[in-house]
Amino acid sequence: MSAQAIVMKPKPRANLRAFDMRRDLLAVADLVELCFQDSLDADGRLYIKQMRQSARYGRGLNLSAGATGSADLPSGGYVWIEEGNIIGNLSLIPVRSDGIRRYLIANVAVHPDYRRRGIARTLTEAALEEAGRRKADQTWLQVDAHNEAAKTLYAGMGFMVRAERTTWESKPQPEKVGAIQNGIEVRTQRGADWSQQNAWLQDIYPEAVRWNLPLDLKLFEPGWLGSLQRFLGERNIEQWSAVQDDELLGVLMWQSSSLHADRLWIAAREDSESLALPALLHHTHLNLRLKRPIALNYPAHRSVPAFKEAGFDIARDLIWMQLA
Ligand SMILES: CC(C)(COP(=O)(O)OP(=O)(O)OC[C@H]1O[C@@H](n2cnc3c(N)ncnc32)[C@H](O)[C@@H]1OP(=O)(O)O)[C@@H](O)C(=O)NCCC(=O)NCCS
Image 1 (cartoon, rainbow, N blue to C red):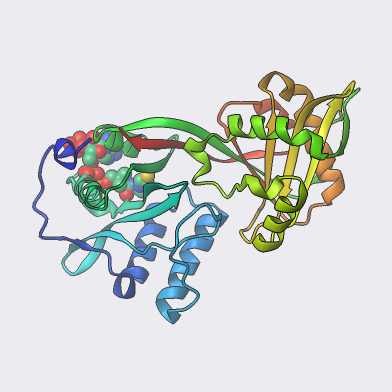
Image 2: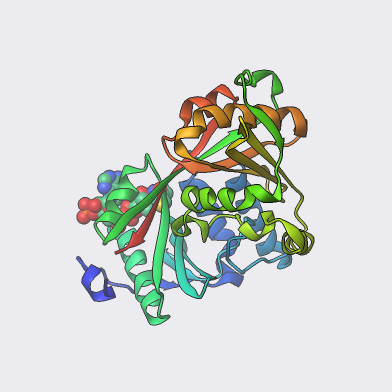
């Protein structure tokens, strides 16, 4: 869709200007914290803390966006000014992978006293024009599944739902772990499992979501290539396979993270999940003796009882939207 097509009610843009990292970061951190106070999770709080630290000390900046899982600080976007104060913000984050130029719209926030005046819409229009100038192949955003205001805003601007994903999280509470299913053996993953595991991973974490997840499939490859990737990425991993009568039912991967929770990824066929997931999650709790929380991104509404039974709670339900 062209930038012109999404302009509905043009709003004067005198109060709009490009985000300036050096002078705006602290005010934007305050605004984002105020506007997202009801939905901030641990990573969100860490993100705001990093924004403040960077604003104050100007060091430790991580401006490159990508599927790193790190909290990338905003380096581009727009702010809205009223009486000298920043009361609106939008971050525009470039994410390049596999030769595709993607832009992610994030941190869209308007101070409660200034809502329903078209400010978020104007910020988004400006961002879409900017993405158009930069020859974006795709423009994306993520919105909480329960955020009706934002979903209405973006749907009205031509964004389409491409995925709904749940982030499940478990604290280290092994006593909550459910019983192992009879007849399911969990063993260390073998190189021979990889081709099936990889096919399931492509299904559960398709390219439409993988570009913005800290999931690098090469990390889990068998052989020297995987070892090299793990060494270079400074990531610890564990992989376990669930097997019944020599048939592979699913594979679970654990990956260390610098964020507040380590990561799990699951590869299984949908009709095997009810058997494989409880056994794999149980095994994970037992074997990792977790001292840190673990987080797992999964298609929304899928295998909900298995995750709950294993002591996981929903941390976030996010709708991924792409400009049509
Ligand atoms: C969502 C948010 C950014 C909207 O900002 P805003 O400046 O008030 O939005 P706009 O005035 O530009 O609204 C544009 C359209 O979005 C929709 N919309 C905005 N707020 C809405 C609400 N509370 N309920 C229903 N629709 C709403 C409407 O269609 C609106 O058009 P209309 O006013 O002509 O009916 C603001 O409410 C906010 O900061 N919320 C908290 C943070 C947040 O949820 N950010 C989005 C993260 S993805």
